[in-house]
Image (cartoon, rainbow, N blue to C red; front, side, top):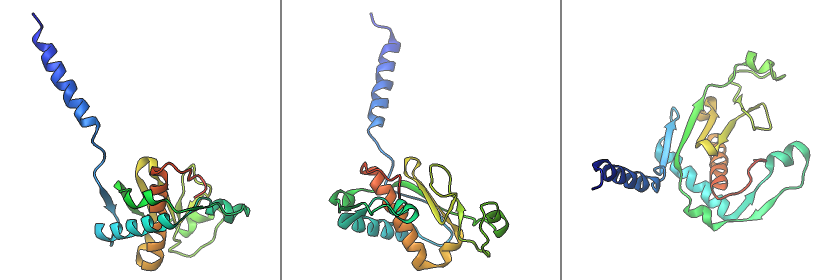
Length: 171
């Protein structure tokens, strides 16, 4: 005779296995002050379109060190890649006094935030960590719609490229 607990354990095991196949829901965790989820999705779709036409893998390396541009043909897989609860967070800008520590003298709003490792720069307008499903942007950019759109599209491209298996260490 089998112990009753083995049936319950088998049932729980089956439930755990069923839950393993589910991924993160599609969408964003929107921590911006003025942008809607619909606006973020429109910017995601722009990032998809951009990457389906051409991929620029090393803009940071090219700008900082003059390395030749690493341009690849577009990847159609980008068009079907969905955002999986990516947190988009408007982060308070560093103050002018805080930037002095980094050897920079800019008036407020500075438009810059700390760029944590493995970032190549110590401060930046924005920073994405696709492995942790997050993007942070200096809050002052939200008031400048065209620049905001460009910044967010670039950062969302990083999420897509990461998800498709590209090396984004120089983006």
